Image 1 (cartoon, rainbow, N blue to C red):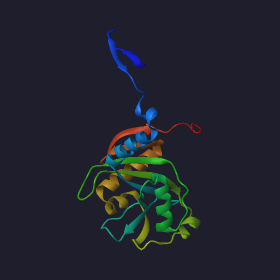
Image 2: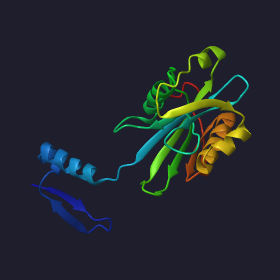
Image 3: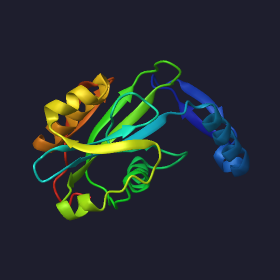
Image 4: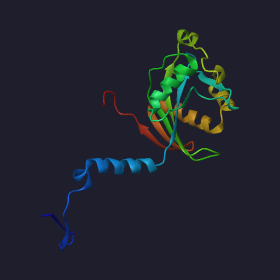
Length: 198
């Protein structure tokens, strides 16, 4: 005998005579989910790190493959978490170990040029001591050089949307928030949970 459902207005509802697919045929259910997953949109994910020196200057890198400077970091590989991508990219580009810091910015970037939309993250790298700075080695031939710059200098070296993202990251760092942006425009400042929350 099937299950009898009653409509909200009290009238008899339809009778369901068989269990749902996930109970009847778990393999068919998994195939159904896989097909749905296959047709879902994929997003590119980028993860950068905000490093500063003891004077508060910001670390920028000069990629060979584009005209503007950038923050250290890069694009995530397939199914790679954003923070893992940031850790890997910093090691590959600069030869230093970054163990992760708190999230400062998530920016949804609309489709542009040949690119689909993407999610871009900025994590806090904290202050690099002079000893850590001495270990920086450009290991990736994608980079020409690196430089610590003042905030106003960064504005003249970065693309405008990266500059907006960086300004929000600096503000988030000061306020203890994480910022959600859409195409570089702040949409929400999210308070960080109290220490020990997780």
